[in-house]
Length: 244
Length: 122
Image (cartoon, rainbow over the protein chains, first blue to last red):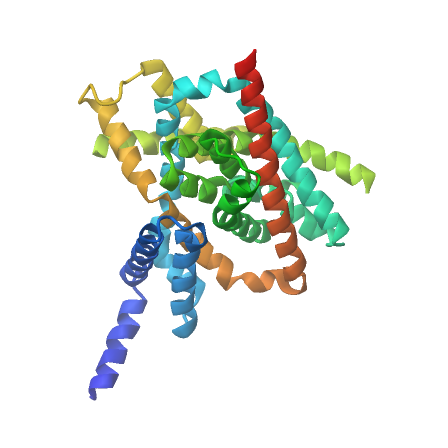
């Protein structure tokens, strides 16, 4: 048997195993994280976006199905749940700051979540997007599992919502810094809060990497807006569909 | 470390249980977050001083959160591989996402800053 054949056989064996995809994911992330850090946390070099591009590129080049990849990557994906629970710790450690701002926090979450829905609906309506897609778009500012649940409840397509939600997260994390600089918001708690409310976990990850206070407020905003949106959106949706 | 991981898993599991049992729209891990926060506020472990369980939980959580971005990579790859789901509406949907996200960011940051200042003045 030729050397190339032998290599091919080993590849066929390895690519069927979770270890290969797990290693590839961590490798791509470490490289993306290195780029992000050595650029001085430049927002356009968002580590989620870069790692996703690298891994997807590999999958497309080697013609690997997503299901096969996910069979390995699911071990990383699994940690998303425990990491969400762990977000309680930075919130707790900064409880003093959080509780002194509780009026501003609750009011902003409530109004901000409604305004986020209104923006999404308004722009979708203007662009003449079909109703099922609008339904899938509406919950896009909250963390993917909540967004998918809401989407299902109001008659959207949950997998479409997952895509939209992740793109929303990356968009906010990559471009948010520039627009907030543009409107001259320097306060780290306000910046972090906006990141968490608009771009859920991916925005929170960006805020956390940059500034501790921003990270805490992002985590608070993400958690609360998730809960508020889950409660409010089905009601708001009923109002909207009465109007249509 | 293992005990800390166990506590985090137990709380997530409790969250998932409550979500399923009461058919809540809030997902299990977020309920787990609230349970963890409640527990911490009740027990009040201090950071840095005690070397016990509270410290362990905090350092484990720190490790998990240090690379929060990594945890979004698998689902992000799924997004790229399933982009065809958006089909003809891709450009419009991207328009809604980009414009809507930036407007929401500006609005919430300004609102929060304004409310904070107002609160501080009173």
